[in-house]
View 1 (cartoon, rainbow, N blue to C red):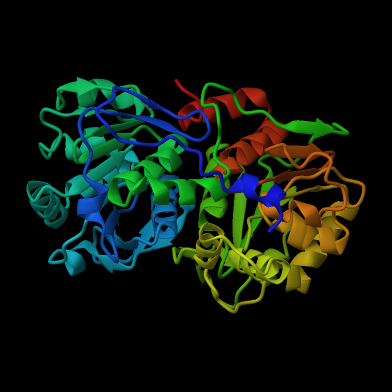
View 2 (spheres, rainbow, N blue to C red; view 1 turned 135 degrees about the horizontal axis):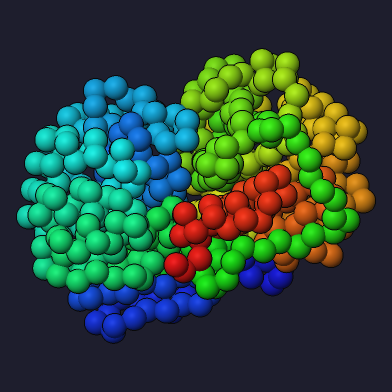
Length: 464
């Protein structure tokens, strides 16, 4: 494989959880550890079992990022609903279908329990007596447990599971958290013994990588972190590179179409949907399949609002394409006959479902072409610029970026190193780790920078 492609899979992250007071890796992520972590040698097993409980009102970005990133590591992740209903209505209208109910898995031993945030969802998790009893026994057994955003203050604290610990949580709940812990922390990820806590949607990817470090080891954390295209500096506000600047105008609220299909990258799709709905855009999630429920690349089950055929009856200010990892897998397999184990494993995890791809959907391609011809806005992230837009002439005369290993498929590669590129009515971006920046850039173009910065602060995109 050509050396130029190795840059997206760095193996230079100096991650090691020792008793040092601070771990700071400017390449990808940083977190604090208050005491010795679990030994990866002790925890190494053929399948690390992880439970991610969800409930109505769960923050979907946090839940899906945790599930997706941990499954990339090879962990066996079970998504469990706190109620008997497996269909969970998460925040911002995102519908997630759980694998099982908490009651169904209460007799199962897990290596890690990781709680997503969302105030209403965490109140529902806190009030689930089956889950409370299960997690308390899990902690008594010395197993790893974790929580992000509201969950440390709303769930773990009231359950008495942070006594004597140093922890962090969503900034607005730090005073509440202080009543339950030995010390609070403002670090983006805090590790104290067997408990790991984090702050918000914007810190959840770092949180998930830290969980892999704790659960499996630093080599696996390196392997998973590289292809995510994570941010290097959390002190910076979001930015994007713009060419041929035009004022984006739209209906009030803007109407945005986000197609999803079997094999879609769930992190990218959910982050885009979540942030755009926070901005009060009217987002339509349309299934390219023949039913509303799709199984995404890491087997997260999502439910669309409508089928694509129905969605085509409406007009949109913007159409945004998340990626389909199945396409990446086959194209890379055809282009490169030799893989490092890291690259092969991570692409293979994308899922090999045989459903119709975005690139082969005549309905979707027709919509995109009409969008361009009407000088309306369209965008794509990760592999979609290279595999959907480029082959259909939708990047002609445009600057764009894409998933790093796909950039050589773009006819104009002059700006591919930028994390988000806007060229007139087109916006493109690189991968899961750039999805928040991508969504914030869309908000800025449609609503203005003030709202984009407010949302960036709300999800703790940069350090508060």
